View (cartoon, helix red, strand yellow):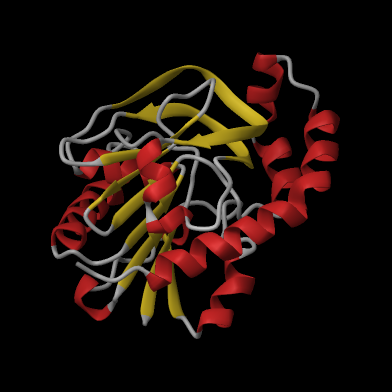
Length: 231
């Protein structure tokens, strides 16, 4: 299997995903949009993975490539190819499916738990997961569940945390973040921490306690994703 990875900004990389993909014999190419790289033909790839980023899905004037990416995601998904989007990648999937993406009632930043819905507990992506599990969050926007899609997870601060449409998945939360990435985020996005009155040291210390659990959950998630039979 050959996977195309879309990276929007330097600080939001594959993280632990890059360490895990070789476990499954996955060949992948990374397109670094922040370096002005062009999207290749989607026909060359068996799966598409889209990472997070600070931009809004509708900031197409500032990030014109989002228009091309929206079209590429739409085409990829309707060809029933596997798609996995994290955070912004989930919001972009929702937008490509014509579902609204808007501001959440408050930013969700820090260490939280996500709960699987009844459909989520049955879905292959979350096979082996507990009904509630720890994740890391850093987002201000949220997506609606597209027509024909299935809601898979939720949290107290943000109702829609994961969904599936055909063979495409969007997850709002992060499991791939490394401590180094988090430290960079806290510097790059410190204005958001200040706005919310969040103590960076408390986030980092709890994150470090959970990071091995996150890595185990990420391995299971990716194993499940690459094992799902294409419909």
